[in-house]
Length: 227
Ligand SMILES: [Zn+2]
Ligand SMILES: [Zn+2]
Image 1 (cartoon, rainbow, N blue to C red):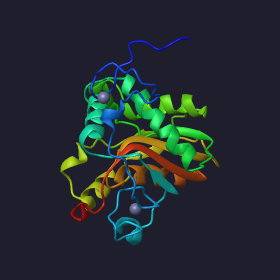
Image 2: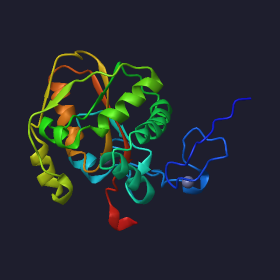
Image 3: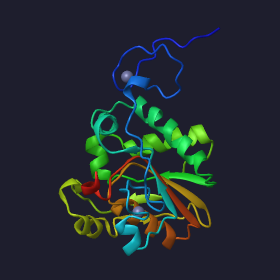
Image 4: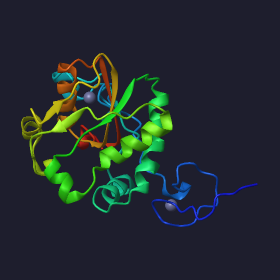
C-alpha cells in the first residue's frame, strides 16, 4: 500500500504519521468558528444571533463563512502565507474551505478572489487570495474566473476603525463582464469587518452577478467583549 511520506504538519512541522487529509496534526487543531452570525459568518457571543453589522446594515453577499477564528495558530498560518510566501499553505487552507462549501450546500458557477492593487502585487509578488481560490477551484472542480480589478491603492486596513475601513474600501474595485447572471463564490484569506468583501460584492452585484457567497479561511469576532 502506498503511504504518503514526508508529510509534515503545516503548523508545528513535525512528521505526521496519522491519516489526516488536512496536513495539520491533531495536536495543532485550530480554533474553530462555532457560534457565528448566519449572514456574515463572523464569530458572535452567546447572546446574539445576527451580529450588529448584519442587523444594522445590509450585505450585498448572501452568506459568508469561515472555518476558523483569526487568532493564534490560524492567524499565524495566514501570516506565513501572506508575508512568508509559503504557497503550499494555500492548498492546506483550501481543503478546509472546500469542506465549508459542501457543508453549506452552496451551488455556485464560478470561483473568484479579492484582487490586490497591481502596485502592491508587484512588491509582494503574489496575491494569497488568488492562490487559495485557485486551489479551492481545483478541489471543488468549479472554474476560477478573474472578475475584479482593484483600482484604489489602500494601505493596510489594520489600523483603521470600522467606518474608516468601509469608507476606504468603497469604490476600490471594478468588475469585468465575465460573470453575468452567475452565482459567484468570492474567496479571501480573512474576513474582518467585511469592508473589502462588501465592496467587491457590491460591484459584482452592480455588474449583474446573480448571487454572491464568500469564503475566507479566518474570520473576526464581532463582539470581542463577550469572550
Ligand atoms: Zn502539528
Ligand atoms: Zn453578521
